Image 1 (cartoon, one colour):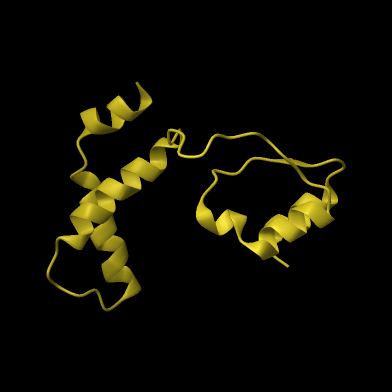
Image 2 (spheres, one colour; image 1 turned 120 degrees about the vertical axis):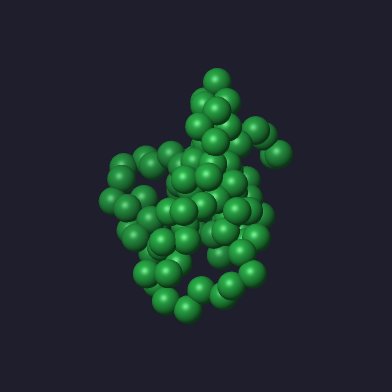
Length: 98
């Protein structure tokens, strides 16, 4: 049982919002939500991604993935992510919020 499922079980009449990603619809997840009477908010498939940080991380991953050198330590990974984040243009982030 995950922390999320324990949290949901602690709530009275829980309502859950998910983004309709394919892993959220696998049988075990659907069975858990049905068994525990967790109400799901209606959310259209293929809706716009309203979580801006996911788009920022995508930009960071694109920049990080363009490096030919393999990361071998956690510190090196962290430094590379920070460097990649520094290259994400502020106007690109601002446009996500606009």
